[in-house]
Amino acid sequence: MKAALLVGPERIDIDEIAAPRLAPDEVMIEPAVAGVCGTDISFFLGHRVVPYPFLLGHELVGRVIELGAEVTGFQVGQRVIVEPNYPCGTCSLCKAGRGAVCAQKRSMGVNVPGCFAAQATAPAEFVWPLPGNISDQDAATIEPLAVSVHGLLQSGVRAGDTVAVLGCGVVGLLLIHAAVAAGVRVVAHDRIAEKLGMARELGAVIVSEGNDAETVWQRENVGTVFECAGASVTVELALKAAPRGAQVILLGLASTPVSFLPMRLVREGINLRTSMIYDHPADFTYVIDRVAKGLLHPSRVVTHTYPLEKLGEALQFAGTGRAGKVHIQVT
Ligand SMILES: [Zn+2]
Ligand SMILES: [Zn+2]
Image (cartoon, rainbow, N blue to C red; front, top):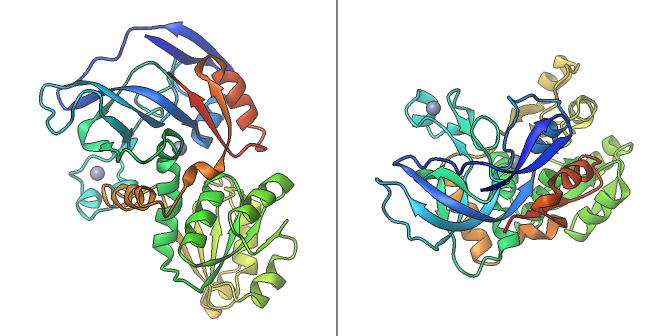
């Protein structure tokens, strides 16, 4: 099958490789559209290392082309998306519905082969049939939307509340979209003007670079701050500028230490929590329903589409941080 393989840092080769073997509990899918994610970019740039050659990609919509021997409930030709993180299902966290943080979790395009290829496999339990009215572009963007919606649901915010979003990458933008759809007022911050433009288009009421965060958050009565930039400096800003009584929710994956004043958090009742991807199967159930009902249109954040042959170029461009969601037309 045709595949776009990562063969070294910043090197993608288009090659013919053997199709993946189908396990009895798996579904074989022919991807139509696949999204480029920050995870793919960090592997591409060599910030995270995989044994080369490796197939990246985990946000896909496609058609079922073959069923494993034990799989029931699917039909060849059916349109599906994949929930690309596979928690073990048996540990105490999984049993408590917290598969997102399962230590044995397997992830497509991270530690099992991804979907930037003519065929991809996934366990049937994590393959979701789609209503016909969802476009391929919306369908391929449901997975990152689930990440953002999980954060929003964790926060417990309600219509009429005001929240701040630090970082208008795809996770931040989709969080803004879901929050606005739920009647929540959003103050959005990013360093890049194009991103602020997108945040405004999605309905953020105030957008700025963030230098004024403390003043604006107090004035607008921000009760929740979502850190979606994944940078130590924005985590520090969130913890320093969050108004009295607010909560700070980290979705970004900042990888260097930060400093904060515990006394302020305790005395002023600032709560800090984290939100990691989504829980199986609750979040996909919820998000697919919202998209099918036309309440959410995650493809509004898609700004560029490349053919599979240009995956390297797509990853390079997505890595500049100037794009919204970048899609790959696989077939
Ligand atoms: Zn992703
Ligand atoms: Zn588990």
